[in-house]
Image (cartoon, rainbow, N blue to C red; front, side):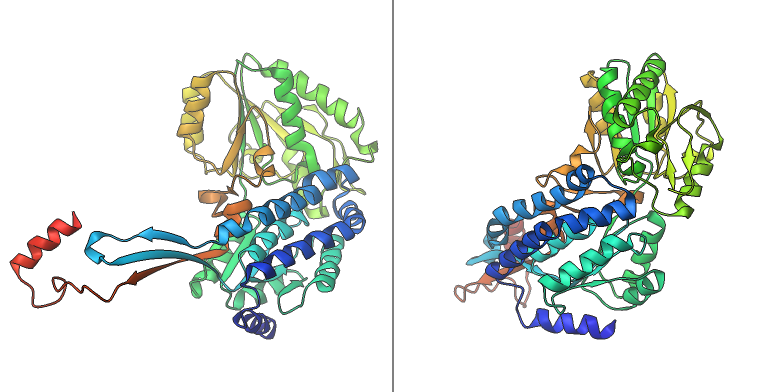
Length: 454
């Protein structure tokens, strides 16, 4: 590992990655490589997660290509130096803010979106002028294998390299000194990454998760809300970091909402999703069993069926859920949707304020006052009003968590800035050189300085 990192550091120090022309060319090569390997990527995603061709393109390949296209269009503007004025006390002078790459970046990606969550941060890191080591997830071995072959064919290993392996490889990587670490995964592992980074004062971005609430008030188009909640919750078999983790619905609308949720589940995957070739699977046996055991409390209104051989759990609606149940104590990360009811939005907000800050929050309402009250008082990474998931599908807005759900953000300009250091430089003229800042000090000089600095 040490040799790999040092070879990348030498490549970076040679100045290869800094020019705009190089960065743009590398983004174009990445784009061409993804298009070339599209079918192999789709096949790998199906083997790892049973993603259909459309879901693979819509949630991974298409989003990656969109990000690359957006970054290419704006990169030259982002790279421009910014000239700023200096205060009168420093006359004659002006300031420059110059964006420079960090150097050698480690990107550690999870298994649930094994193309998207490797390549989107890689795109942003390339745009910022860094060398990169991609650590893919061992839980998505087929996609990892395709990525490794694709990257090796496209880029010099001293510039971008894919490293495969499990926890031991992760441990070895984190023992090395990087200039930046970008990690996507669970809060538990995120804490370990941050602990290792702290030893060398390495800056980090942590994209974590948490229990993202979905609030449905009494002034809402229930059918549309149900349709979009079902899409956001059960796509990728619920294995999405920003999926609605649970629904908080006004008690007047609960039964109507549950019926609408059931309707759209049937519409999307049929009455027996286990027979639907487009319905995904859980990633591992361990993950399958964990989510299966979360259905032991509450009342199953729909679903609850499993196929252990295929590691599939049908879309499940869980009613009569209480805050103290096990399913409300951890991120579900699977196709089980607990339904809780409320009758007072102020009490609801006070309850949620006491919870860990989630990665996402969704609110379905036509009431502007309720909407603004929720959005202004609750802290969360990002979210949607009257939709789910779609806030992360645009490169014009940053994506990231807060508190327990992470730190830092990426996508588009936010991603470029995440992987760039803003270097501030003051340029001073030689003359005149006012003497008031120099010793010997006096009350008269202090009075002048007070006027200049106020």
